[in-house]
Length: 447
Image 1 (cartoon, rainbow, N blue to C red):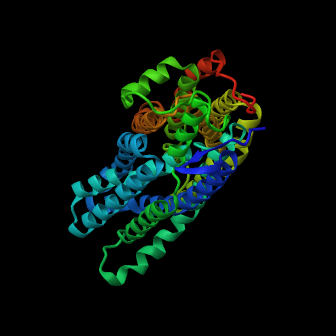
Image 2 (tube, helix red, strand yellow):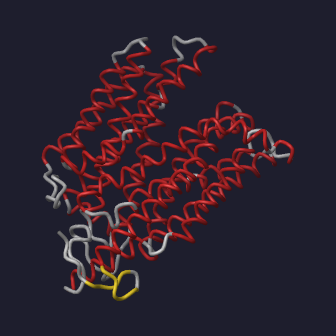
Image 3 (tube, rainbow, N blue to C red):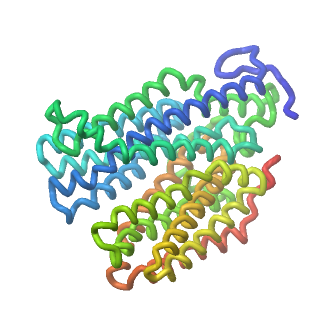
């Protein structure tokens, strides 16, 4: 059991560190779940109609590029956001990410009013800030978590996104109708609610995310290193922030030198690449034998099962991450990804088998995302952790964008079964790395 040693927590002397850390962590996790729900709703309700708005303004041929612009924007924005977190903590970084997403929503509304396609893509790029905030929030959930609960706490922040992702598409039409009287163009109304949601999330974090979890973790790590604070409350390998942090260059060096960090970032990026590559072309595959009258209903069911696999069981995946270990869950996630590619790739025109494959695909993504993110966070020093996490989100986003861009070409040239085969091949290097790498053992995790 952690000794109760008096130290300074967030600038308040005389606090009992373990009790204060537990209180701050409970409050942080509650706030993150709330903002994940609000922000996730804002993100999803906008992107539900973003492709349709692009098609109305510029034609079907460019409509898919709006999603790509948002994905790339979310990935690239992770770099400055992580730099803000490095210097000022989680609170200002998350606020900037949400406000950037709100700015993107305003620009997309303006594009609809002006009927100007280039502005729409600029808006979509900045709208990706909502995704950046949602992804970075999962890391904030483990800054002060006990080693034996890091996987569960991170997975809870991931799971909270489910509520917004499931409910938001059903809110898009009412949101559009609700603002028709204001003169806002058709399909632009949902972005008004996105802007309000992002603003609300930023406001909640500004007022209530105090003390900052990352800054508090650094203070506790510094106190523990000097022998004056509570031991066991900071992540293994953390220390007080000292010396010069080189941002992404420093993050590259840290990942290069730590096998556990390499495994963590590789698991997150590879799982996302495989998931996006197969998922994005599945509606096209279903359209080969379903009529237009039934296609949207079938696609909705299949993708709902896929999303449920990604998010609904995240707390279970987090519990397993803490119970059986990070590497074991990563290996399990890779096994599920391989099974998904095998089932979906050999399904032919069997919708049920494709549904099973897409559900397995979501579960495999959840395993690599939760366990990989947890392993990455706890294996790097506190002073470079935001930069490493930002690099991870950048890598993940670019991997997903690359997979989405190439998958259409593969489908056109070779077909859906070959796409699944190539996705399975992409898993093999990570599988070899996971089998070879033995991450440092973390107390009470079973890793």
